[in-house]
Length: 534
Image (tube, rainbow, N blue to C red; front, side, top):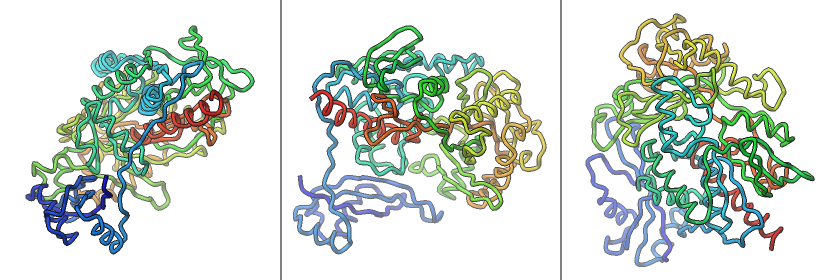
């Protein structure tokens, strides 16, 4: 295949057709259009900095008849010639014992997929239900407040990402991401994720995608089990020899990929009891803020806010507070919902979720403040979990002790008074909200930082601190509160145990978790298989 040249920052206005890219490419390369064999859109983004002239900005890989022209142009502009990347998973001879993958979030799914592709016939175990049954459990919680602690927003097929916006944008520049995106498209994700600068799948489409990946793992020789909780490890001479599931079933193995999510608190305790090296790590906590989607669109797109090509507007904000802590938005869900994400009795946790079309009346995001082990009140490795639990329980009590979430209008929050009636925002949180004061639901330094940040954020997005915008508490599961040690071969201090993904403290989102799952699978193939069995 001929080399490709990447051209970036090609701008087209909202009225232009994408087909006009070819003529723009020809002008940039000073070549006739007939010399351009083809081009592929690598990234498409919206530039809304000038509200009077909103642009779509493209990065494209171009192939031309005369490759010397590409080399001359790339040298002149100091642009690297692109060689198409092909990710390949090595084959391996079957192992005496099949590897076990625990957890079916992005890290576990892609670790199992890679191991199955290599011919190692992994066993993938998930504590929660398959996605079809899980949807019923989640809907029951939304409607009645009856929580299934084993299958909920956090636990079940696909992990926490199943009930989210399905965001795929990441700051990690890793060539494995292309393979991940291709696999997602093959499994039914929208093809536009391959080029969007802010790709997302949406919870509605993601559910089918996850099921199709599961079926591919099975087709490749893997096995998938649900309602199967890892409850103990059997360790001899500092090596794993078996895993215990549901307190009764023993499965022999010397390779266990631990891809539990960031909410597997009982698993963390079990690992600690088994002397798996674990440490507390920073994360962030805060609230969800909810606005009318149309108001955010107006603030971001100006007079173009109803343009059919633009869709729902996104934002990302950060404020470094003087005499306070940084405050930032996270997991922004355009046209989405605020949802109950509890996984433990007696606690309230919020998260955000969007469908693919992102067409709901409201847009929301988390509004978070970092916390560190110094805030946890203990040096114990699991102190961050207790810190989360303490504030989740306070939010549960403030919401009425029935899984309704405490909520407060921004104007009342800034004025220090409880809310008694809603404004223009109709809350989307299920199982429901209770208007109150949020001051007792988070540490004073978090509340103080949030109150300082909101007016500053309003300077960047007009209406962000609208008095009628709604705050819902609390958000505590932004990332794992622990990190599990692993060496350069991705093993923990217990040989044969491979921590990975967000729950192990090595990722923070769907794509980074999937990349980490692939990396761990590669390590198993390259080191364990090669060095121990060949």
